[in-house]
Length: 120
Image (cartoon, rainbow, N blue to C red):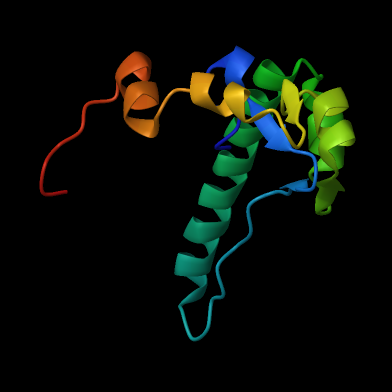
């Protein structure tokens, strides 16, 4: 998700790093009542559907493709991640100047309209 929320031209990935997509998981239930387990399961399903829509929107893939890929952990090297649409550029050794052009996390937040609240 971190890659998807960044500005589209600055979604870079090191050539030696892998990316992984998977559906959200239900937290362990332990000794919880069945009603609490049901509430958590419904929340995970809602989160999964939202994540599928976001990934489809930002990668250019169909919701069906993203949903299918997310059924199991889907690992991608840099080339596969670029083909899937998760990243825009692969950063190779010697291309450090590209990193200088990438916005800082604070600037990303500001451009996205996220307000930082002190003390939280």
